Length: 382
Image (tube, rainbow, N blue to C red; front, side, top):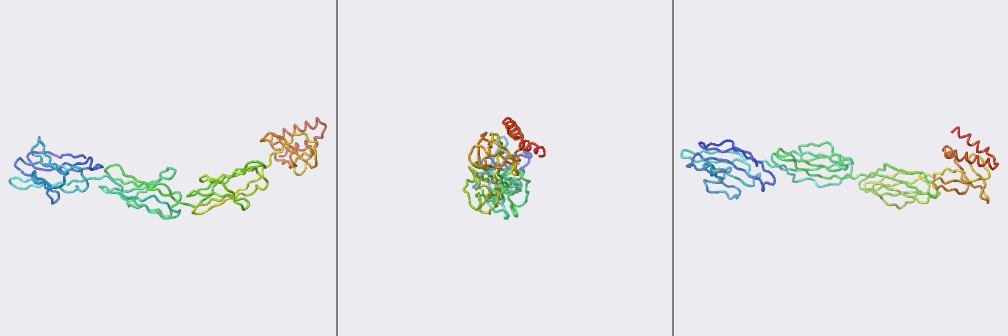
């Protein structure tokens, strides 16, 4: 509490007009001294609060234990009133009445108690559906009366522009998912730092799938399909292939479907369905077969080109055409049932090198390289 005596005189009775600042908590640190000085040792004094007598001379009339008369040893004319643990109810007019031999001389002063802002009521955290109207309330006390302001803090921590309002209400019409987050109420006057409290607003909305990913995969391989959705509450995912559901494990806002040991019947469109209590959304992605580039490195008895591409015929005995392919990812070579070789693989440098190598091998064994050379020649037009 800061008190200042405006002036001092021993030839004249007076009181000082002062302002008292109440610093929270008031009962620990706040007090006020209301100065009053008598004309001489003969004069009598009395203190009144409005119409109630607090002290008459040295006799205490008030039952309030917080008030007392302060007399200075150095200044016997002092007749000051001290109030301990000042609170807002002490605000008002006080009178030091000085009774001399000639007349009664009352001196008036106002005690102004300033109180820091304090938020005593604020809306509880709420959860609403997108599109709803929201009304938040924040009530504060203080003297002077504090002003109220709001600001929005998004879930990512971004602070939006302050929403300054003279009302204790903050109204949001048709709230959107972008308006979810914390709303901070701040109460401010010119006494101390603002008092702040926060309301969390959660906005529910139906799922929306914003990413679907899949990659082509070969037979016997493992396929991964990913589906991501935005939703509050967190959605439940389901995958559907050819009308049948697949049991999966949900991972928050993302679902990853793993298909092991791919077989022919597992190719097709996969549909991801995301559902929460507000609604659902679905999206489909094709899982297509990826043909591994068939690189002919084993010695096959003859070569030929047809509309399907480059194929090798014979080898390994037994009936039926077979082709020798190299599984590039495994680095293995094996005879497999007849598979047309896509000419698209011939666009790669690796395939060119293999074809040249095979041409040399065929020539050294006295085999015709006409078809191979025809294929290499056609590559110049790719």
